[in-house]
Amino acid sequence: MDYPILNSINCSDDVSSLPKEKLSRLCDETRRFLIESVSKTGGHLSANLGVVELETAMHYCFSTPKDKFIFDVGHQCYTHKLYTGRRDRFDTLRKLDGVSGFPAPNESEDDAFISGHGSTSISVAVGMAKAKKIKGESGYVIALIGDGAFTGGMAYEGLNNCDKYLDNLIIILNDNKMSISKNVGTVPGYLAKLRTNESYLNVKQGVSGTLKKIPVVGKGISTLLVSSKTLIRRNIIHSGTFFENLGLTYYQISDGNNVYDCIAAIEAAKRTEGPVLIHALTTKGKGFEPAEQNPGEFHGVSAFSMEKVPDPDAAPKDSFSTVFGKNLVRIAETDKNICAVTAAMKYGTGLQFFYREHKDRFFDVGMAEEHAVTFSAALAKSGLEPVVCLYSTFMQRAMDQYIHDVMLQDLNVLFGIDRAGLVPGDGETHQGIHDIAIFSSYENTPVVCPANYDELVYWQEYLIKNHKGAKVLRYSRGGQESGLRDYKCTGNQYDLSENPGSDNLIVCYGRQFDECVKAQKELFALGIRTDILKLNWVNPLPDDVVEISKKYDNIHFYEEHVKNGGVAQKFAMKLLESGYKHGFKAHCVPNYAVRAATVPQLMKICGLDKESIVNDIKEKYEN
Image 1 (cartoon, helix red, strand yellow):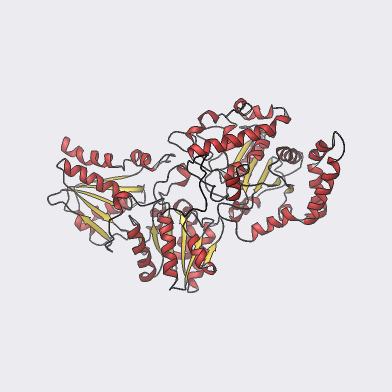
Image 2: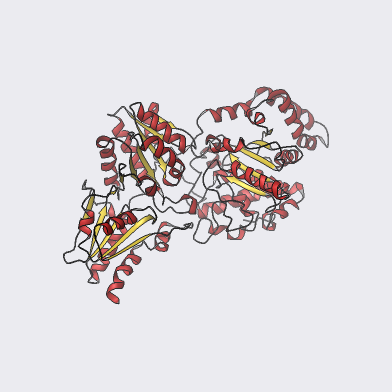
């Protein structure tokens, strides 16, 4: 496709220099480019299609990097990246050494702050705006935050610190009426009242309709008077809104997919004293009908054919998430105390099945992991059996709540930790490589890591029925490895695969077992005998695994987790305490940011793939 205007944009100032009448064409080209490009690479589609006009208006009215754009959650920054010199590399989106799908300051000075988790942008923007004031720097700080992120409490902590002197702070609320899953709670209801007030809409439509009838200049006047309509709304209808009570001037854009209305509102905000919140109503998936009809299904997509767009109603393929969700439905049929809790991830965690069958016991609390955990603690304290399903990367946000509200009271809560280990595409902010360090700090919390579906189903039911108190079941993103489909669960806390005469031991857990089994076979073909100790319970470590390991001269531990606080480190400490004096080497995810790449690429980078394992053990015999 041809993109003549978009191809002329290489920096923020190029947008500002465009004749204003060309901006709508730029938006059209940008939207077509995004659909075509993301269909080939995969990525976050519907969220980015909804904010093309907003981000175009931001670049028209401001100049990065002098002006700072802060994105929340961050995956809606594609238009910004196209306008700041990364268009020619967009075919590398979310690939190894390619363009990140999230703001990445190490990638461009136009990305002001890293962002991958929700509800953080206002706190960041307030801090940067204050810093500009202290240092006497010019320029604005603009936070673009979605309505879904407003279900997270940190957004309000940031709002609470917006003082009246921050005339360099503008918050743009992108209200598309949903996050990844449908928004829940009272905040979306409040926003709905703001955007659907009948009196305001009547005033707006009446003024706009009258002005547009004026020959020649009527349409232009209608656009330019967005700020006047806003003043009518503020003074007549929404005076005393929540945001204004916090000291922010509130503006609303009824059509956030109209670039000229967006520009008018932003220019009005720049003339306003003190901090401003612009409430822009947008359509998620705008311009691509399948995404408009099913924005949640097109939130994050794999590459797809434009000739055959994926059917969102097709049954989802099996994954650890769907197997977990379906099995939980079965268990809950006979155990009426079981509840399911998630944080805006009903589909991502496989809980849509539970929602359909046990709606009264399903709770989606929005993008609020801290609340999810404490809320579940209260359910457990009241005699129910909550199952909390969160992505590993987002569980990090609720560490204090787990320690203080669940663990200290030994409450009966099962944590289903999804996307554990290495995760493709989303890069360093979404890796599930810290959760074991959180949970295994406490010996009374079982942490179980199934390697395939059979083990997942067994241990899920076992933990619910046989272990009272906090417990954790962690599993990988996607499906089970093909080599482990027929591996049957033994119900043991560990499994030992022996080759008589071996003096090498591989210790592993979870899906890492697949790479280790493949390496064991290749080493055997080379005449090198290797045993595998597969841990099913990684916390507490089974009683006799250390004594079993002491008979080997060489122990290699392979772990999809950072070394500090991981299982390998704890295992090594127990070996040392037992008097072990032979070779032990921990192969873990390095303690630095993990880039966006496929899982096989990440495995290789981290030295956890079959080839690396073979080379590690073979090295002794070659020297």
